[in-house]
Image 1 (cartoon, one colour):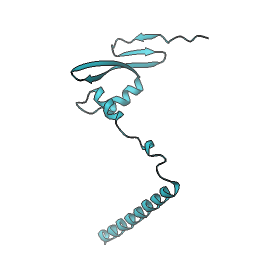
Image 2: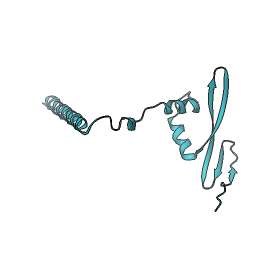
Image 3: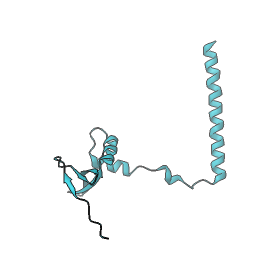
Image 4: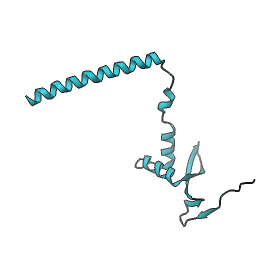
Length: 114
């Protein structure tokens, strides 16, 4: 069975089109090499575009946003760096610190209420 590419329909907005049931946005991505600037087109679903737009900071281009986000480190990169024993020791230390903090806050609250 040969599966063809879904038909893309224009929406009147040059950066948007519909493909099947999804709205797709086209965003230009800028690459700078020495003194030359080249661009790449990428297609995003409307939902992905909205996520990206929410992460965009004032005065930042979409290219700047993508470069900033792509450079972020993920917590998943830390998976497996501690043994189970080391992880348990760390959890116990954090829980102990939290308990001391709660006790201290309770004492301060009691002093303020007195």
